[in-house]
Image (cartoon, rainbow, N blue to C red; front, side):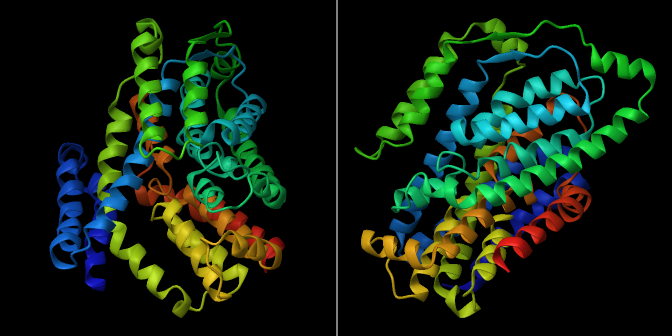
Length: 418
């Protein structure tokens, strides 16, 4: 593996971070060309230089599974319309975010994000600020989904490797609770200051929007359940994705057009995610392969090491393969094989802190950037379509990740992994 082949991945990350800031209109027009071109360079290297077509096919399968899952959830949730009755206060916003964090463990972070982001924006339409969306990404799109294998893709990979379904909640709920309470507390303080700074007229408008509470698109709950059941279908190959696509198609063509219009539903957010993550999945192959070959040589041995290393890379790489690579490296430290059920049981019995650290690191740190987790980009795109001026890639990190997330994650390390 030539380490120089990580350059396309670095260039793509740099383009995502810098290009919209330098020339937003150029980036909006040409980002598909940049993503596909850089991805094609790496694919050609693997196929024609390394003669490793199977690695490319495996990544393609992972990409298709990823995009079909979040795409089908996006389509089905777009056919469900929540109407919330007024009361856009800091208290009601905290309640809504806490509710989103809980249900993200039932319908996944993508499902919860797509179900709630539009009503959340609508109910706050008179006082919506960028921080409202950022904390939504932190809580609903990422941290909230740390309790079940359905919640976030990395945990589902662990479940497929033999980690029991309820092991996750039994061993992560304390960290989840601490992080969630702190994030909600910080959000409440910021939102309260923002609310009090508004004029009396705006406060009145925010508190009493005057819309009746309603729920439309009930038939889509069945399609949503079909997608969640499909997550557990392993054989035959492609059946899982076929069920999800069928559910998405059924939802789209049976949903009343009026519901899609009220949701301002279109395919722009999922198209952007699909194109950019095609390039990310393709260009990150050398980075992940290098990590798999050198993880032990990097000196990653303690739960604290695994927490920070998994978290750091999950901020910029897809957190699912990052989770699996570090989990595999953890097994290797003790001469165990992650594909051996007996070894999995032994590892969970004797070295469970490593699994705990990798799980929390992968899920929590996905909130650190727009590309850390799939729903982040979709929420950003929907918010921008609704008129919210979202921060740039670096603005997100400097204004929110570093002052909010990193201190909280450091406290999690100090309390549980130190």
